[in-house]
Image (cartoon, rainbow, N blue to C red; front, side):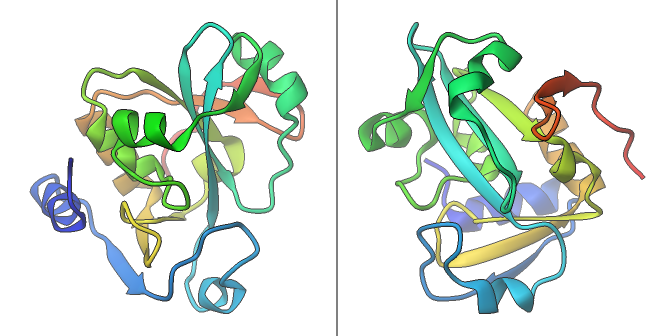
Length: 173
């Protein structure tokens, strides 16, 4: 699996500016508020899910976004959703629970995991994700994040969680 250093080398090779702030491990949304306050940009929560038919999903949303998991399947066109087990997370995305991040898509070259991006993150100038481990926060621009996804051949499904609807990805500013 890709290491943190490998991820940064990937960013550098694709011209993606990035800045990482190291901090004590953060396992859940709501932890590390003082760390987040010192880092500009949108902060995230990331959910690794499995639907009733076995399809894997990664949901990346702004940290304060409310996600109705009981209704989400009707919006994204999946079967009913539940949290994926850590063993499956490690196998599919190469990260442990507490370190789930959109950057882990680098470990999914076969694209087993479908990616859903919150509209708020898709419109943010700067986005922050763990760099494959929860002891750091890496900031990239929206353009850099889109470049990352494009380099992986990924097109996210953008969801407006407030309206509970899929939408077109906003243009990069």
